[in-house]
Amino acid sequence: MRTERKTDALRTVDIDTGFNRHAEGSALISFGQTRVHCTASVDERVPPFLRNSGKGWVTAEYGMLPRSTHTRSDREAARGKQGGRTVEIQRLIGRSLRAVVDLHKLGERQIVLDCDVLQADGGTRTAAITGSWVALRIAVNKLLAEGLLEEDPIIGQVAAVSCGFVDNEALLDLEYTEDSRAQMDANFVMTPDGGIIEIQATAEDKPMHWDDVLALKSLAEKGIRELSELQLRAVGG
Image 1 (tube, rainbow, N blue to C red):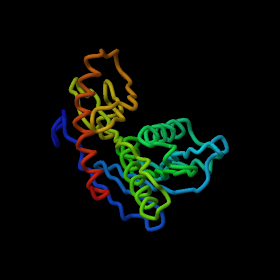
Image 2 (cartoon, rainbow, N blue to C red):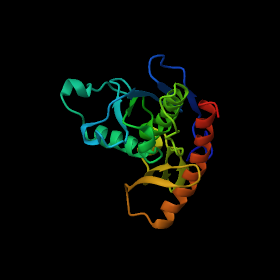
Image 3 (cartoon, rainbow, N blue to C red):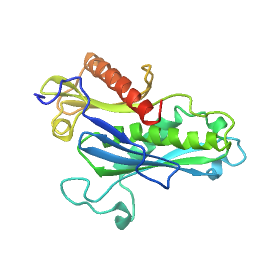
Image 4 (cartoon, rainbow, N blue to C red):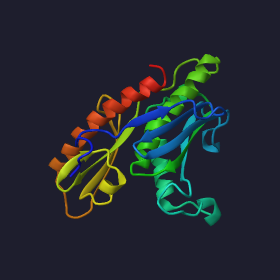
């Protein structure tokens, strides 16, 4: 049973937008003890499949530092390839951000979000998505201020949060000790007005029912609204 915070409460969330002086946009985001550094880099080129299309692209890369967890893990670069989990998460981040960007208004340029997990305590992908929107917003603001964009290509906000059933209790924003023993855990990628971009849900012990998913969705909506307010504060409104 959760004792340190309410079942529908987020962990303490902090967003530092001054962490990286070189990137066009950056955000160091903390969900409790989970910390992810997100940077947005603008490239005035697009991937080959988009050349001469008039469209831009938003993509992401994700990685965990060797000592982001209890024991050291090898860098994926040292192993010579990315793991399946890494590829899945970075594709999720890219899809989530593209859902709130008008790629035509972005023009033929690419924005790459790099998400590096400094410390992991559950919810690294949800923190990465939430922080990446902040970094993206800052980078696009810079392009607008410099006159490189005529219109704002960002058409909405996106944030993400985890939920799950632990000891038959529905909880918002799972830390690792909760996530590791959850009967069902889910990641919700949503807009502040309740729009769903992606839901990843898995039952670990026994099949769960749709009513259980809806109970978690209700928790997620509350969390997303709160995260959205924190994102806006981080980028100055």
